Amino acid sequence: MTRSAPEGAGRRRRRRPIGTWPAVGVTVAVLVGANLALNRWSGLWGALTAVVVSGLLLGVLRRAGGTLADAGLAPGTLARGTRWALALIGLVAVVYLAGALLPATRTLFEDRRYAAMDGGEVMVRVFVLVPVGTVLVEEIAFRGVLYGLVRRDRGAVWATAVSSLLFGLWHVLPSLHLATAKPAVTAVFGASGLGAALAVLGAVLFTAAAGVLFCELRRRSDSLLAPMGLHWAVNALGYLVGFLLR
Image (tube, rainbow, N blue to C red; front, top):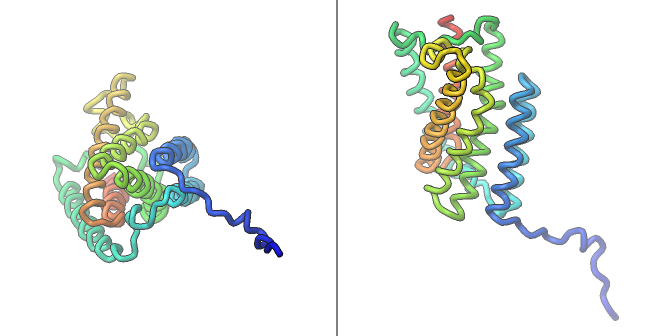
């Protein structure tokens, strides 16, 4: 007598994992849509979008056969990553404090976007919008999923190059009004169309270089928490110092 297949066995067939480079392509496609959305939706909607995108990207990594270790989120590395993050936050705080106290560097923190903000709005940015809407999605995308995928196939150098280049391009849209928002940038590039284009190019190159640093922190600490800590400190403490000095 022939045994029948268990009910629903066909529906429970294991799906084949997708290849590394198709997964990279899917990740980039998700990030293009996310970049457009996050530069259109601000506030809590932007933070919610960042959480959804982060989950999607981790899903892509898993479908490609990746693990939490590939994303820099292995439980065994979290304590070491936390120590790195706290040390980096402390370092940025010291540097920013010195920069705020010195007249020669104090103007670097000036930003016209702070003019209409109150203390509550700044706190929301520092403790909600920056860590969730910026740090979470960017670190999971660039130093987590993209870095993890490419490193498995080509090694750390390729992973750093691909991740950092795309991280720089991610900042094209946010940099479009940089030349008029920050007086220090306006003084260097001017307020013309050419100045705005040069400011965007400068921002892309700077953030790509920052991406290399973040990738190296990810490699050395073996944890995504290290670049997360530095990323949060640079952005969030920059908001706080700029607000206090306005």
